[in-house]
Amino acid sequence: MIQVKNLQSLSNSINTGEPVLIYFSGENCSVCKVLKPKIEESIKSNFSKFTMYEVKTDLHKEITSHFTVFSIPTILVFFDKKEFFRKGRNLSVPLFIEEIRRPYNLMCE
Image: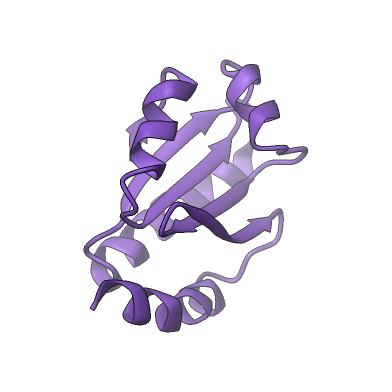
């Protein structure tokens, strides 16, 4: 995952229209640290066109508030410049993959 440094670069990536996943996490969040490699591996193996970003909420409060994220971990998925999916806290990785498979196939293949 690419570490986000500023809002402008993240907005530019979303505005390309390509699929984007943003993973909001925290430095002291143990769930975030366990979930991140699972999400990363699942996305890489199932959806090659995704660009994945990570936002550390404790370091980048401006970005976190821009996307109205109140809890961590939170995952945002963008297709065609629009937020398609938002999932926070408890997340089943296999269910998450299945929920984005159909829109990914429609938009990207």
